[in-house]
Amino acid sequence: MSAKAQRTVVITGAFGALGAAVAHGFLSAGARIGLIDHAAVPRWAAQAFPAPHTLLGGINLADEAAAAAALQAVAAGGTPEVLVNVAGGFRFETLTDGDTAWELMFTTNLKTAVVTSRAALPYLRIRGGRIINIGAAAAARGHAGTGAYAASKAGVERLSESLAEELKDHDITVNTVLPGTLDTPANRAAMPDADRTRWVQPDAVADVVLFLASEAARAVTGAAIRVTGRG
Image (cartoon, rainbow, N blue to C red):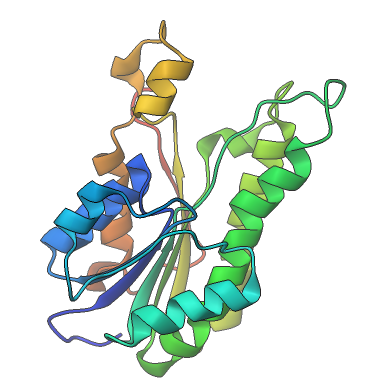
């Protein structure tokens, strides 16, 4: 991978709590950031990431053409060398109670990572690079109502493993980070009585992502790293 001072880093799901933490981490490291999200660009992001950073809201990353156009827009300011697939979501639904969660979770969690990785590969192959996918520690086992989520996040891990093998001769590493329960506003609202001291801070996950993007991790590929704190 290039040893230039400033790298271009693409982050999907960049306007959520974890995506924002990852983006701020790379900003502190001196990177140029391409922030992409299905949500509209929030005011805080526009203020924190002015030009030459690229902010793209309203992007359907499960759509091949939209993902390719987004990567092209970021690449106009610098060839991407790191892709962090944070985009994802959670839906609790038992199979008995409904049939919307499976398609939603596989589209939101897995297909976005597949499609965006494919869109990024032409740029990553130029100088080598990194793909870092966000899975979930909870994907190790399904529970009632979380089958779709667990299966889709397990798919993210398998994607990373297969891509790591596919790209190992192209100087591109591919790894997965498996967070435990994150201390985010959404999780606090959903679980108001939980012991939040056992949750993982988003910036702790971001630190692991930055390590995997660093030169120190140049020989790490196909790995899945659990970041679960005391959970």
